Length: 168
Image (cartoon, rainbow, N blue to C red):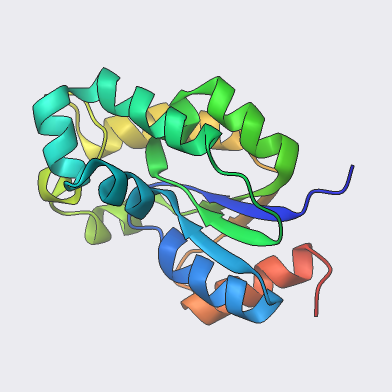
């Protein structure tokens, strides 16, 4: 079965939404940002959902939104925490080529400053470094393609993904 979608996974602030929009435009695909879908459906920000319902409930909500994504020829920018739910990842993998946008911890630390207002799914008392160590092996497990973003600009990341997908 040919996978008709491209799903982007990776840490918060790596550029999944920005790259996703540009990649969709280049490929002539639609674009879905699951974080925005969740915020729209829940009528509140991710940060507020996490604050009001807690991390476990937020992850269940995120999983449910992923399982409702029925599309073809779309780029799907996922939330960084999607990898915590195997059912959601298996569902994405059955319909999408999963592209892991990788970034070094040192660079991430310069980009991801306010975890709370950004709505990052993280347990109280955990650091960005803890989150990175916890999630990186999960991203590695689920990815079909890995792009080491480093200091690349979004258009360069799009070109790298296109080459790996064998699309001009």
